[in-house]
Length: 280
Ligand SMILES: NC(=O)c1ccc[n+]([C@@H]2O[C@H](COP(=O)([O-])OP(=O)(O)OC[C@H]3O[C@@H](n4cnc5c(N)ncnc54)[C@H](OP(=O)(O)O)[C@@H]3O)[C@@H](O)[C@H]2O)c1
Image 1 (cartoon, rainbow, N blue to C red):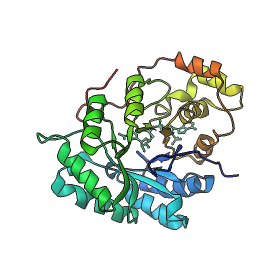
Image 2 (image 1 turned 90 degrees about the vertical axis):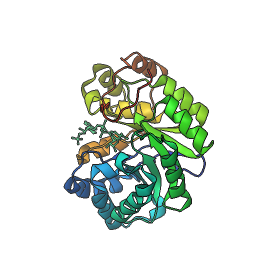
Image 3 (image 1 turned 30 degrees about the vertical axis):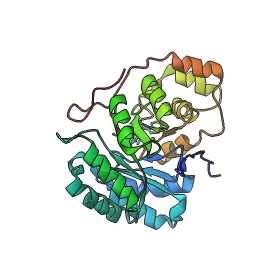
Image 4 (image 1 turned 45 degrees about the vertical axis):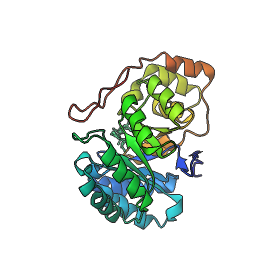
């Protein structure tokens, strides 16, 4: 039976709360795992220019025979394409590789801007949407100050999400409060803390009450939160199945309390050349 994945609505976004990440998946793996993922019921796919796999994602989409409207495809513009002279061309190339006329969500991958600041790139991002290349737009890895600046420039309700690292070991409490105030969704990348959750004894104990694994508990914890989507990645069909089988149980208040007590300051993705000054 295919899983019913909740949809995050708002501003016609309709983003499935569980997506399929493709970072570090080779073309070969993408071509073999995405058909499995589609069969299991995944419809939200997360890729990026820098992942180098947009073409194989596009091949898998084309071969799936699925209605375009049933899919939610995100890609991200890499920082070397942020200049307004290059931005649109790079998005057109992404669309060509993906075999699509439009992506559902187009993100700025990291907040890396030259001396002109973020506004010219935000303007190019807004234009990509008004020209029909993207249905929705957003940002990724922006800290609170940058997020506030981006929303101030684009206007309220224009940016759909900030895609950031978020999992049971990283609280993101301040960021989440501001996201709520600014009316942006949080898309949680590295939702399994890069598989570190797998051997967590607390998550394991919680999962054993429901016949679920630690990884499933970690994902369930995310998708139970308001306006949070999670995009775990895997090249393993068994893991792909496990990661979507999280909609038939619910965490108790006590489970949530135990997860709240896990260390919440472990950030695993912080590349020196890209990362902003993170908020606590
Ligand atoms: N915006 C950004 O800057 C940014 C940064 C990082 C990631 N992302 C996005 O977020 C997605 C997810 O992040 P991520 O791939 O870095 O980390 P992740 O999803 O937290 O972890 C992926 C790892 O977990 C393993 N795994 C997956 N499901 C499992 C399961 N059920 N049981 C045990 N192990 C499991 C995978 O190995 P197997 O293949 O063996 O299952 C892989 O090693 C990326 O693919 C990408 O789309 C975005």
